[in-house]
Amino acid sequence: MLPKPNKDLKFPINFRPISLISSIAKIFEKILLSRIQQHATDNSIIPDFQHGFRKETSTCHQLLRVANKIIHGFNHSKTTGGLFLDVEKAFDRLWHNGLIYKMIHLHFPDYLIYILADYLNDRTFQIKIDATISRTGQIQAGCPQGSNLSPILYNIYTHDFPTSPGVEICLFADDAAIVRQAASPQDVRTTLQKYLMKLKKWLKLWRISINTTKSRAILFKKGSFKNKLQPLRLFGNSINWFDDVEYLGVVLDKKFTFKTHLDKITCKFKTRLRALHKLLNNKSRLSIHNKRSIYLQYLLPIITYASPIWGCAAACHINKLQILQNRALRLILNAPTYTKRIHLHRDLKIPALSSRIRKLATNFHDQAASHPNSLINTQPFIDAQGIYKMPIHSSRLKRLF
Image (cartoon, rainbow, N blue to C red; front, side):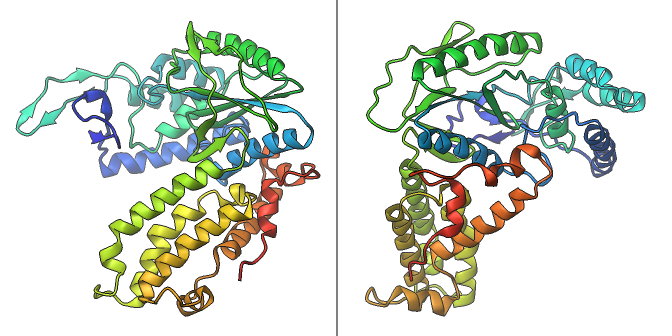
């Protein structure tokens, strides 16, 4: 059992059960995985809007779809509504019989179905705390976390996730974003509520639970607008409207400025820098080369994650992140504050942050244009005309120095 981060460890629900699988079983799982993936690929079972646990797709690809939709709406004076659902214990509550039924319906080979039925059924567990071991319990649902097969099985189980005209579905494993764009906020809410009625039937049929307290709804609209819409409803519970939501590690605010997200990663960067201070300061016995490696491995990824998406933010926000990088490089080199930043970067052979973002964004958008997924390869060619910059403009950032 592994503790979940930032949770009260007095409650068993805040621990994540991880299955320990023997080495021979892992080899066998990989063989099964290759057969399952081959059948799923040949028959196009996994929908294009599901990007989780798939080759050549990442969180940035799904974020690109959402960002392009929102900014395109800004440039055409439309309102975009986002419904971000939290699937409760997605892997732990996967219905075994439902999965087997779907695999039969999808014409998976009989031998795979028989093996997976034996693999999932009659599993047991025990909990050991110090020298005390609990009684053996039966696992009635779910797929083992830590197994190579669990991700693909979850994708197969949710392959028929409901769709609806005028609504875009963006899935990354169990993170679901439902996006609707319309001329008025009321139209957005009406369509999203109708979709929830359809989704409710599917969730009930396949025994999937949504945590409405963690689910969020948001309206992206430029100009002065106070959201007085009624909350969305699902299973009699309210899904409230918020000014910002976090999706796939990026905070999206209602004006889509990315200011809230960049403030968050600024705090995270400072916290990590303080934790590494003793390794990076002038009293450390580490070489400059090793300190540089620590920065590249543990600090730089914090301020560059998803930068091909939020790199279109205002220059003042990018400059604030550059100041953070300057501070870390001065610490590594033990350089005084009056040392010019161009010398810091030249000595450590680290490019300016704008140059790194531009390079990452250029590679990302170029690869997206040739991606085999039709929902991804069309994104770089969406009409980018308008006063609001789209993510593709991240590849055209001006050099700071």
